[in-house]
Image (tube, rainbow, N blue to C red):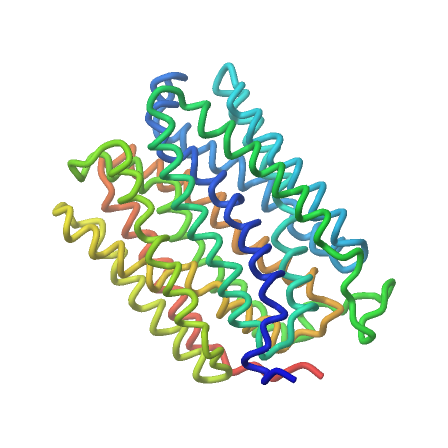
Length: 395
């Protein structure tokens, strides 16, 4: 018998979940370094370019609550397989867009299909993996997000020089293949005897309405800053640093590269209760400071230093800790619904951040105002944690 901390039977599923997030975020990120090309090709400005991300995340966000309810009621294999493959198909079709409106439509449809992945994948994970292993498993899974952003930036800048369609086609095709693997590898049902098929899920607020509301607000604040950088960092770096092409893509991907080991490091020992809350507060403070200073930085070395700090303390590092805060006090029957609601509220930031940041950048002609707003949201998240108390495990 393996010791609990050495039992790695959860690892294959966590690695598959990480592979899923790898291409989810690669497909999201691949368009960001190409925004200037889109602007010139379709004759649109920063606000319209920001609307591309907003359209994607608007449909993605809208489907979170119904997807979460379905994740508690039907086979996760169907939700993951159909949703993920459909997402890959519409990402690939983006390369065929003849005009701006078509690009907007394909982006919205890709977001709609991708919306099934988050609540279903994390609900399956929370049911398959013991609580003692869940923080580290979630860290492995969310590490795929950072790796995906880096992959998307590097593929776009490395292969998009001659034709912007090439990286989009490539990642779309690979996404369809991953979707097929997810369909084959996901069990038809993963409920335990405590949550039989057909049981009525408990409402997520049963974990404490006030506490759950605070976690929702915290997730929103963390995600606003993240999606501000995801949508606009490559665009703004092009005007601030002397690098171009693959070097520029590597610089834009640097925060997510830093986040890969940091995510595992911060979650490796799976601290719980008050210790985990103190860790969350420290990470939020460091991330907020780095974003506040980033808007005023012009020296490339200073910019990279601040991006390093954010990468090691920002959203990707916080995700597994916030997820553990939710699952530690939530009945199993409501996992899908809770994760759908958590992601719905958090992803509202992905609708607001790209468009609002694009407006601020276009209005002010610089990065500072948009960065200051992102920092303010992170500090608001830090303030929210003052009202959080350690979770009481569910029975």
